[in-house]
Image (cartoon, rainbow, N blue to C red; front, side, top):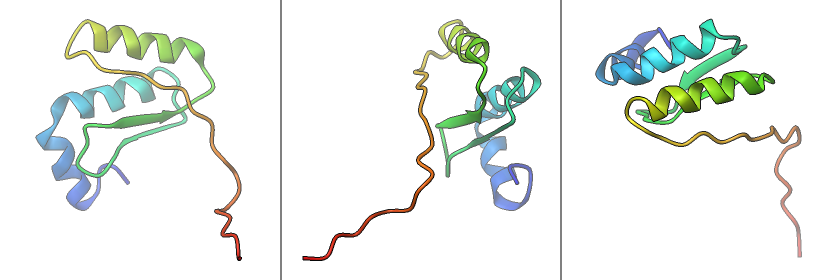
Length: 81
């Protein structure tokens, strides 16, 4: 999906994001992509080494932050009063 249509153009405008996505895929991410126009990129993985490798790559280049999050596999709850 990241290489189709307008998303492809967005990635062309932010080459470091595209390179980082490729790096994450090549190093074990099950999936990776960029949010809207970026610059947030994400990967789906359970590999702690990938997290460390991405942090090092960012520290050696443009800097940035790496967060580990977990998916919430349930829908939103809307309470009724």
